[in-house]
Image (cartoon, rainbow, N blue to C red; front, side):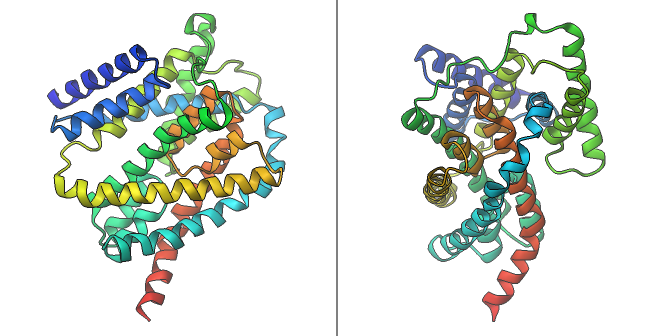
Length: 342
């Protein structure tokens, strides 16, 4: 348990430092930066996966609680931007595979699954089956999520002057006890049922579906309290930072550098899509950036909650992106590889 205890201490110090210097998103960015610095310094850290997954259920409940009938009525209007999600995934693959294979020197399997903007666990499983370098995949995807999550708050402040100091919810003391209990039930039952049926992103999507059903039935009228969402941010930030534990100088030179370069490409590509969508009047700029940024679903949900954006819009696009990658990645990899061989 010593690595786990050290991770908690380091992450807590990161939160305190960010609060002290009035930095944005102290509960999310503080643990990321502190755990990253500690990992690079050789500090042994670890996490408790069941606890980390439990914290992610809070975000599913938070999103599900916003899906009222009025919000659901806006879904048909999203189709023009939803249709662009597969196009962006295709562009990422066409740019990413040559970048990792020809410029960075990775084999095809590693290059392909490193470029796909899906979930970390899914891409590692697919990549391992295809013979990819699993450690390199893990470091590249963690770097992608970290850089996107760290860069977006500053882009939101710089471009739209977004206020990231807003509490992500009401205090727990203001929410009826029976509703807090219902949220806990939706989180646990939704997660376990989704896991049993094999739904991807079960820890978020299961509670989301269960809570949305209860909200639509007029059984829930509040989102999870601010304290719960801060806790979720803390564990998400700590999990990202501790993924770098045990990294070597060779991995820093090759995998981390390759991941950083690809992140720059992803940010530029995302901003191009955002500019086109906003210029055509299809969606607001802030929500579009959060919806098309190829970061982690949980992390971008947190940002949408904090800025008070259209959470349903953001989540719908990320769910579609992950679905497209998970369903299409293995098939596309076979086609891509066979054509290269010819």
